[in-house]
Length: 473
Image 1 (spheres, rainbow, N blue to C red):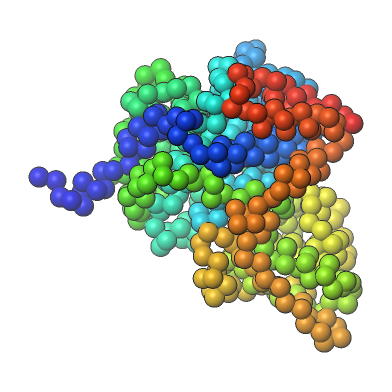
Image 2 (cartoon, rainbow, N blue to C red):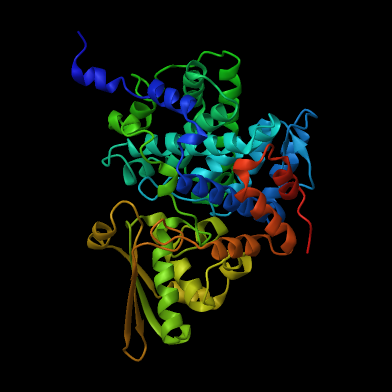
């Protein structure tokens, strides 16, 4: 007879697959539906920005177009309206969504769901002409699978232990989330959904070397993941048999990537009672989420007290965890700047804001910014983290002036966090800022209105058409 522990450890993949397959739009509270639509709008803005303004966005769009087999299934965002195979559209659009550190974040797990999930849903949803309610179902299901798989990882493995091995967790778990979402949008039943998750386990991967070198593969993490999800779902749909225990199995995800340290109950407990998508936050700043609270605190100090950066002697920052990659003062690439607390605070002090413009190549070599970086010192503050809990990534900043004055500010929940959400106006302003010069004001409003009416939409083609060929202002 199987022991209770062994029986418990067998829980996981099939139960998740069954829940995903049975999820209905009618199960969802309006707050969950609204969050899903807000995520879609935010993701489209981030993707248009990368596709229009960044070379890696242009390169991946060209690649996806050329290698699409001439099959116009799904739109490549910001590509002049070109279409390609759904799997290639997911690759291109995921790279764009991940393309400038604008993807949303689940703070307790540091996962970045929308680049990993939405491009798969939008590509297959467009290709199969799926209605808006099916799109919303798939997004919610993908977030649930993505976040639960990550949350089940034991605290002993989460964060530094996995990071120190170079594992990029958002891609690792995101492949499962993207696959679940892709399978849901095309209506896979439990057996095929289980296989799809099993195939996803075989395809998953992601590591940090691109972050280390500032390479474009940092952006590609967000493309490969939903593309793998589409591949897994299409194979599962055709009866390609995948492992049925890719998470909890003897050689499954948790043993391979988390040293076998996980809580299987977290995978299934309370499914449908609340929805993980509501725990994520939409980013207000284009950089690693652990830097947001401290940057926001510094911006507040400067604005409220009318400080000039030349009068600052030192900036002390306390944040989630002292990690070398996030505390470095040598910044040579845009990627490294987006993962540097000293750079984030220096540029906030010198320029008085932290937008996409603060992460242009010329700002990285600004003498005033470089000098200010040397005046920033970082430390871990356990008490601050304990007060905010794992549901946030808090920060505290102390500014010491040359005349001896000190100013202290802390932010437990940065703008965009569920406890400090963006207003509709702020969400629209972010979209307009990202798409400025490429999308007209009227088209911004049209995209917003279409997304906010998604549950009544028979086909997402009109949304993708507007985003596929932005019209310059």
